Image: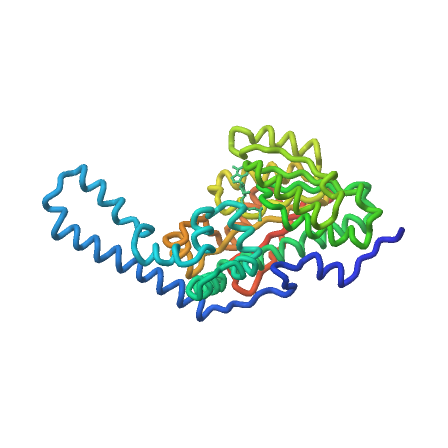
Length: 345
Ligand SMILES: C[S@@+](CC[C@H](N)C(=O)[O-])C[C@H]1O[C@@H](n2cnc3c(N)ncnc32)[C@H](O)[C@@H]1O
């Protein structure tokens, strides 16, 4: 059977939260919302600190002073508490910040909005879902899927016997599953060509991945293998051996590099570079610095290592990648990077 790749398959593959196109900045309201809460948290911190300094601290000894730091924690302030408690969505994002479940909640924001009951919770959830970082995260998934689709088609058209994909810190693995499933729906004869490995520290993510695959294309889950491990410097040798044995054509590592200090990020990317098959590609990302960073860190308690495009490019170049492409998105916060190992390397 001939390979069938159409615009409809592409559109199905890259859809996120029911939408194909990038979400545009809806920034004025989202931004004002973020800034108001941030300013309130800041103002409260300042008032409390001054109050304690002037009236309470002079009477306290050193041990008590240590407790003041805890009291000053902005997350415990009434405004932040009000924000968390007014919407299940906000509470969930805060409790699961940096986890794949929070990312899934961002990808499926419409489902969360439907579940909110009171008018206040609907408004707060709606406004939070318009915060640029949240919109940019969904755009990042669109770009990841675009890159994944393009690379898979490239592999198929060049007659690859097998399409080997490794997803590092895979979480729900929505990007690879939805792209592969969309291609398979019109090309079922290709099922056995796909082999996908998922690596994650959280075994619950794998259960979700299997269920998602069954829902999107029953039988696809049989092409999966899972490695439950915490990626750390200590196991870099194992990771290197794992990749060199598989020799994947595509490695996807999204939502992980933003937490790696530079030296570790270079090492990690070098291991990926060495493990890729010649001509293979790494699809990765790193959040850029932006106006909402402090809001995210203080109110949502989500901290990442922000890097400019130049900084990420340097990391990738240090790791060995000579060819690098950047896929940007309208919020200019969450670019996706495509780094290729040349076919003669
Ligand atoms: C922010 S989520 C990203 C998930 C997915 N790649 C995406 O973009 O939707 C980060 C994922 O990395 C996993 N993770 C965090 N630290 C890890 C580590 N040291 N080794 C392996 N996985 C890790 C978490 O369990 C989580 O699934």
